Length: 93
Image (cartoon, rainbow, N blue to C red; front, side, top):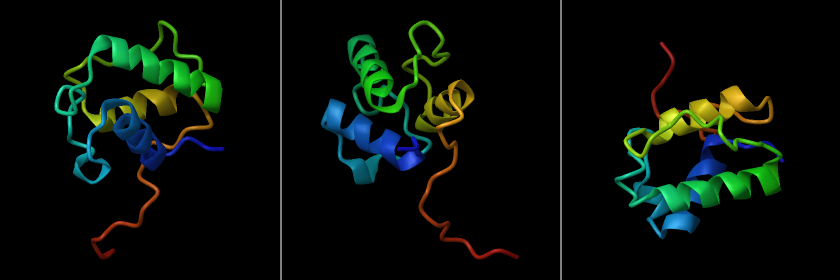
């Protein structure tokens, strides 16, 4: 299963208990009360379910945004997509 922006948000909401609808690309990991232990838990889940081994390679901090996290995941795996899978609400010009 490909790892998309939406699946990352869903996983973060599940791990932190945050409301998935309140997590935006600009939300920081601290905003959803992520701590270093939860970040490790997320990396373990990503490794188990999506085959992304991030061990020491995840270049994000707790001040990083969700967009930063998704971008870092996309850089680590060709199985990850850096953009949201939901259609944009703005019309193409």
